[in-house]
Image 1 (cartoon, rainbow, N blue to C red):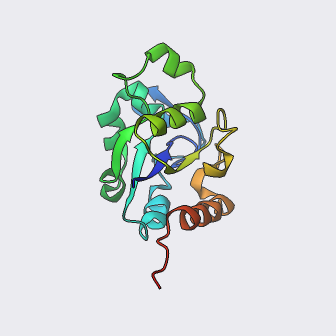
Image 2 (cartoon, rainbow, N blue to C red):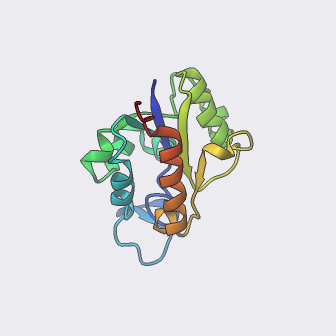
Length: 167
């Protein structure tokens, strides 16, 4: 049985949203020199869960393509866990996907791929009304730099993905 975390980038792995400049992708949050400032936080939290896959739910996949979005992750330990993206142009009407709420994008992917065990880490809440127990919501300006959110994620990982003890 697959164990999946649907992962957003902006407002999760770094503070703020991003935009493209002639010098590359930059954050809208002041003072950020390097994107993915919280990638190591996520990597550390996933260490006890070797079966967890990452499926990218970030708009980076739509904007830059899957390979470039995956390869933007600065840590091999995260990149090697990436198995897909919610944006699947071969399965989706591009215009409809872009307008679909994030939670519905994720639920659609989970349904298509028969994934029952999943969490989403995102700064968006739209479309999660039936899935709030699966959403670890980050504040865009803080991301995984918020200790309270990190503790929620730690708790949800343990609840959903810890192996039951054998007696």
